[in-house]
Figure 1 (tube, each protein chain N blue to C red):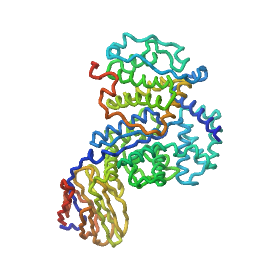
Figure 2 (cartoon, rainbow over the protein chains, first blue to last red):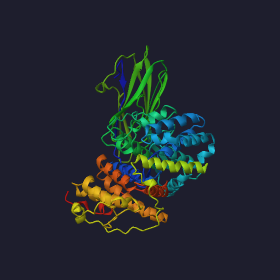
Figure 3 (tube, rainbow over the protein chains, first blue to last red):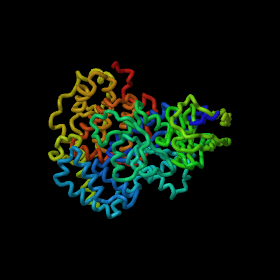
Figure 4 (cartoon, rainbow over the protein chains, first blue to last red):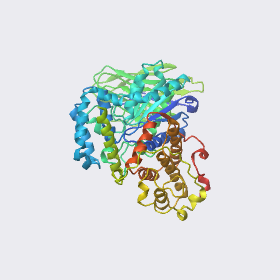
Length: 402
Length: 197
């Protein structure tokens, strides 16, 4: 059962899961981004609710409104939050330039050039005085924290789904939990279009490579890598530097690629929070030879690879030489077939690849020998099959064929 | 420092107004901030929505922008200029869409009637959220563009925009439930099934 060039390990997972049962006590709270009116934020939350409901997720969907103070102050506020995220990483002059560029690209440019720029400059010079951040502290989000506490006291869980600047606030809320008695696993985040460099509490996120706002932020400060590509669409009236960023028209657009991925992530995270999943499913491959071997996992509707490591599960460790690669799926949210694939990418010597498959009910291991490859073999030539099935009492049965 | 930010806030508001196509009324009107005036409009009926074009109020004229509330000659909670726009441009061929747009316009207008307490704000928000949830059930970018158009027309002067900002500030960071899970009878002011097109 061993091919010389390429080997695959196939895992078939049959799942029957009732999310309505799992999420009854959960709350999903959306926090909007900059320059969003209350009405637009309400729409964001409603569209999110409709999409989750259509997938059988019965969690209460709520809105924590992050008010707009006008595009100028919103941009300054977000810039300061970004600076505060990584103190001293961005020179004040850079922020000034950024704000200036944005304003000069906007329809208000003539007004800006007639004198407001002096006021902006003075305000941004004051960035050096960190007390200025007091104006934008997340204490305004005490209501969100109170809601988390309220839900938690009823044994429920809270998932924050912030968009854009809302990610700064979500991180702050989770950070504030440390000062409370609320269990850390009561709240999590699935960020959307995040300009942050991390997601607090090891949460998940979705950012499109075509998101111009995040691409722009990345030119001056690190953010989490945009790992998914949502194709560009016509967005009438949206300036080019804002395209690919809309919560409703891009990330929650059922006609584009992002919506199903995002809803999968939300479902997964809710299930992990709620503790109503059988547990993590993991695949780990390891080898000692100085070759590049990749672990890919074909999931329902997508393939997780080193170039695209986030799917329903996630490649949480990869390497290009001797070492290991690790895939973890925290919830079997989507029924279907999951096929781990091992790809000998580059190298000049044979390699013995150790394969370890872990689930809450046990482990399986084996070794596959692979030789230097020169091509990718299509799925029908899969070798080594491992069947994993779930019965109604969540018992897992393996049938190992490699 | 606070003065500086206050100054920026005012300027940002002005910029937003300019970006939203404000009429220039900000410098011409001197209407003070709203004194609290609870809104008690006549409820909209299916008959009115169906036959709207035949019963439209006249063009309100320049006086429409001299007060926060503007002119609502038929006292149905929708400013006359907006009512005319909905009937003649926004949704002349669909009574179902007209009904949803009117419901949203009423909710927007309620903000301009003012609020005294957080309970008032929450009540206005409830109406606004019902209208958004109703629209979300029939969401399209084209329909939502019409909602935005009404929003911009409603808050078209500095004073009106200031009132909107006060309202949004009162909503700030509070947590509200979405309403889309409620039955249609609680979302739609006018039953869509009672409308022909």
